Image 1: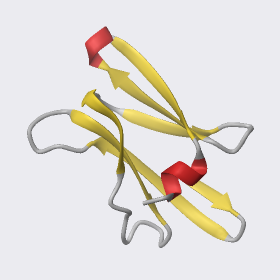
Image 2: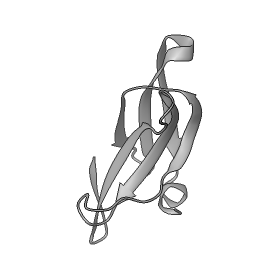
Image 3: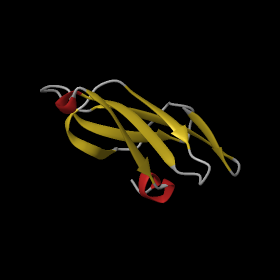
Image 4: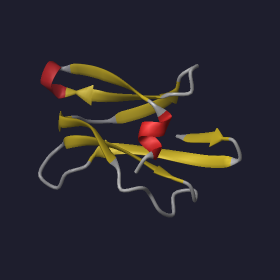
Length: 86
């Protein structure tokens, strides 16, 4: 998801970041149109799946992801300064 913050174009990316299964739901960002990404922050350390993002009216990042443990979906509201502090 692209997001303009001031003059910066921020690209967000999330995935289950593990080589041993679909765990560690992680958020990353890029300030150079996806050429490089931040190291990432784990949002949810257990099972997760497909994900998407939206910006709330309070300029926070809403991260939606599959929540297989409960057979449904989860939403995490992330403060932008927490996401960008990587």
